[in-house]
Length: 335
Image (cartoon, rainbow, N blue to C red; front, side, top):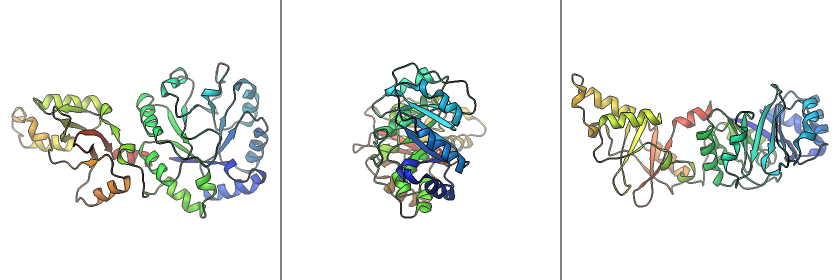
């Protein structure tokens, strides 16, 4: 995941010093908020004269058209427009040197991106109030990010607002491509350490497992009664997640069947696969975790087990399946 450092979270009056410090840290981009202020482009020109680091520009305006010439002259690497403020039709210019994006506030449904999916390369999900520094990440956006990635898998995701080390850890798990970081990075006592935490390291978290999990509605879930090997294989192929989860009539978690479970089951009947029963490829003793445990407690659980866990079912206090966590997405998010 790339880090886009919010320039104006530092000292705007001393851009030369701010740019020099951030370049020394090797940040990936400089994020600039333009709240319908054309003078911002003077800063962009100054920054480009000082650094080769790409500019990540977020424009909040009712009339994007008045910025096309300025954008063409300054050539930021990425430009996003705030959807909710638009009062004219947004048609991106044909410019292959710029990645175009749509910024969406927390209350706005991601389906609004549909009309831009053929012209925009990414969505900028605003997790706090746009243009305000130091806000707290709104956890509703975890679900928004999951929904966007599921509906628009070929588009990038950028997140802005309240990103600190623990939020960054979850965003990396979701495969977010760019995180905009302001106050946490610019006001940290040791900026190099802050950047390392944002990009690479696992940190303790007060966020809950249910904030991070894929919800049940989007998982391969089967009722354990009257299941066949064929139905399990077909469901596994349909979802392409590498596993199926099983519940009873009341929704209680009853087990999991992973690709590894299937291989082990097949090897029990090498001469006649038709003898394989569904029960032989379902692990009824699979490790699971309560949705109200913290992310920190989840990793404590994983470290206590002498086995590799790729998929972790999530249950509520009644033992009903509510979701799952796929740890292979964490690996992808780190690439």
